[in-house]
Image 1 (cartoon, rainbow, N blue to C red):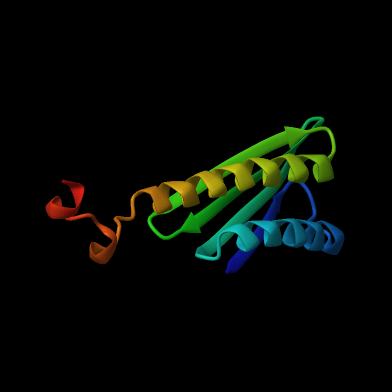
Image 2: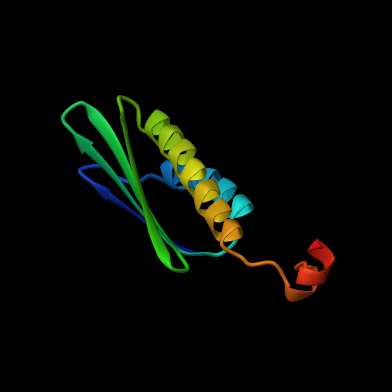
Length: 110
């Protein structure tokens, strides 16, 4: 997983970097096919904003969260991202077809 963290109008300290990295490990635990993660931490007036774009095979998932505290914004962001990753994983599992040996034949149904 490639991780790119940048800051707009805020310095990305080692503490923020390690906090975000530890939180994003939760995402990889649910779905291990993450190709690339791009995070942008920014400050707009009194609002702390965190944006993350996660690139998985076949789809890009974008999530953003705003709060008064950067750490709280990261927590909200990871919760939203976790829900979207689990939803994406369930969609992938629903679209898989059953193996031919597990499908019922016409004779077995009658």
